[in-house]
Image (cartoon, rainbow, N blue to C red; front, side, top):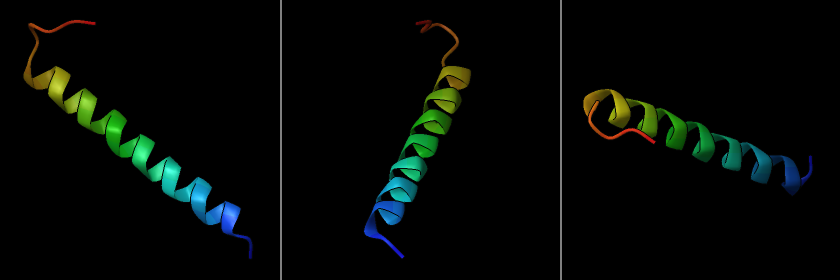
Length: 34
């Protein structure tokens, strides 16, 4: 098992959490549009 896989998985989780957070925030605030 290589460390790169762990790093990629952690980055993927961080990106997924960030996307979900942005989606939830955009749904809560419909006034702010990108």
